[in-house]
Image 1 (spheres, rainbow, N blue to C red):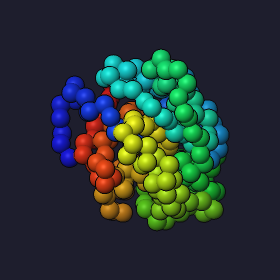
Image 2 (image 1 turned 45 degrees about the horizontal axis):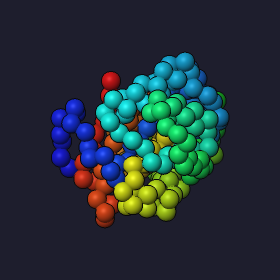
Image 3 (image 1 turned 90 degrees about the vertical axis):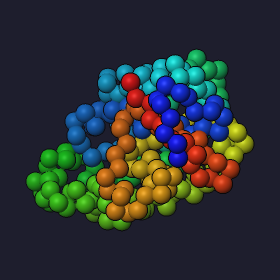
Amino acid sequence: MSDRPSEEPLPLKNVLVLVRHGESEWNRLNIFTGWQDVDLSEEGVAEAHRAGAILKDAGYHIDIAFSSTLKRAQNTMRIILGELDYNPIPSIHDAALNERDYGDLVGISKDEARRRWGDEQVHIWQRSYDVAPPGGESLKDTAARVLPFFAKRIAPELQAGKNVLVVAHGNSLRSLVMQLDGLTPQQVIGLNIDTGVPLLYRLRTDGSVAEKRALAN
């Protein structure tokens, strides 16, 4: 992959734009969220507006958009597209892009979880590839629904030369970035996806990554 200066845009076709939803109310409170349908915080709304403005200022357009079925992702997508001043474009919401299910951890603060199960165990549940929390999904489980959806629904749009926006969640995007970047299960432990920061990829026809860039403020 090349590493161009941040002010030089990627070619404006065949671009995949990944955005983790803006900060949610439970992100703000440091609570495990998973599939709980929590909305954006005030800061999360502002992050979504900034993401859209950054894309607009950089000259990117979107042909089709995908999000999860959870409103924090859907509202982030709506705000981004609003900043881009678009007429309605095809928008698909699918549970395959939902956050990983945190099972018994959902609704518990991360500090409380560490008190109950210990720092090391909670860290393993949060960051490892194939260890699931009780009653929930691992990153491997999440990838098992995200990657087939990407291959079936999103990759063909990119191969057709379209620019695609995907607004999803920390772990659904981690599973996708793991594949795009060719990360190992050990390497993905250190991967974090920030809220509201557009991550841009241009893919070759064979699905390999030609270029990658994060667009931060």
